[in-house]
Structure formats: structure tokens, C-alpha cells
Figure: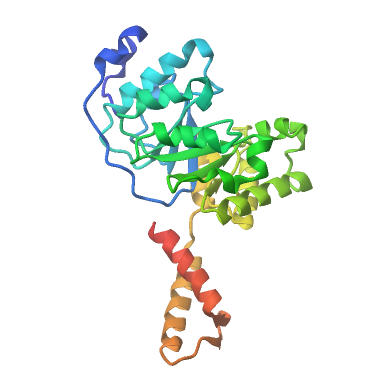
Length: 308
């Protein structure tokens, strides 16, 4: 917990919370093994108080659509207060601002001096918004985007203006609305949804952006959430948006690397490197079949993910 006695903070009037800012600064996050990205409402002080204990690989502090306009300043000041008292966290901390031309620019300017890892901007429609956010954001922090408009979905590669643009989050419900499609088509096996997921994944990967799949809204349907995670892992996704700790636990397990797969990758690496030293780059193995350089590179990719 960040504050041992949260009641003291809860008793502080909202208008005076900035008077209690701390001077702590957490170490920038280095771990790149991201399986789960948990959305958190900064109006809930109990949830904010535990961001240093969460098992989520990423935590997104949400200032956008879940916060009523009349409470956005309160949510922003809560984030500042808790970040200023945060010494360490195993989670990569992201702040999701409002749209860059709808108050997000001022939120970035306000938050720049606080300790977190990335800003996420929603409702992106063109590269100009990305450029504006990059110019405002401290250079040590990453820029993430929410892909939820038809314009952004059409050509994702145009949005990676800088190496700091590292990650895109699929806002599938808003995207469907932007495309003029009903949201009730979000069902396993629907060909339109399969196409959206595939295009988003391949287009993002092709330009060096890490894609994060959409938020599954039914928090109590753990079986449904698990099915989506397994489907998306099969497609090539590595990270899932999560609504709470129960979904985080499921995503961490499904998108983790199991011992069998890790041992296979280690064996293939050892076998290939041994044969390659004798100028043999393609051979049959009794356990794993034909092994050549592409199989070796895939094993290295898995081992690299595990190291992260």
C-alpha cells in the first residue's frame, strides 16, 4: 500500500489534495513482459492505494470516458497525489488522458513531472494528434494510443512518428461505432471481428507497435474471458486489456510461457547452435522434427520474451 492509513487522505477535501503532494519518484519500468493491462478508475482511492502491489503487468489510470466531466479534475489530482508518494511498483504505469484536443494536452503538461511510464491518448484520428502529444510529453516517457476510430484503423503505420510510440490498444466498441457497425457482433468466430483483430495485430507489428487486445466487458464471465484470451494468443497477441484482478490472473496465466514450451525452445537453440558450428543449418531431430534457421529464430524469440 502507498498510504498505511488511507482514511487520512479520504478526509482531505478534494480541493486541497494537491497540498499533500509527496516527493517520491518510482524507478522507470524496465520489464517488457506484458501479459495484462488493467484499467483502474482514479476516483477509487482504495484501488489507487494498491498500485504498488498489483500483479498486473500494466496498470492504466483512466481519465477519459469512465470519468464524468465534473470529476475529471478530481481524478487528475488523485493520480498526481498517489504517484507523488509511489516509491516502487512491479506494474508499468500508464495514464490514459482525454483526447489531445479535448483537455488531454493540459493533462499531459500537468502530469509530466510525476513518475509514471507512459501516456495513452484516445480517439486518435490523424498523425497531427500524435505529434502534438509527443511534443508535450517528457522524452523519457512512452506514448501509447487507443485505436478506436475508422481513420486510425485505416493506416496504423502513419501513427508511429517516433520510437516513443510503442503500443496501441484496440478499443473495439468505439471502433465499431466509428465504422457504423453494431457492437453486438463482438462474438467468437464472427468473421468481421476476426478480420479486425487480425488487421490490427499485423499492421501494428509491421510498424513496430505492440498491439493490446480489447477489453472484455462482462467481468463475471471468466470462462468467456479465458476463451478470448486463448483465441487471441493463438492469433499472436501477447497482452489483454483487463477490468480487474480476476481477469489479470487469467491473462497472466494464458499469455505466460509454460515450462514445456520454454524447454523446447532451449533444446532447439542448443541443437541448432551445435549443428551450425559444423556448417549444418537444417536437420531432422527425433523429438522436434525438422529444425532450420527459421525454427531457431522462433525459439530465440520465445526465449527473449521469457527473459523480458
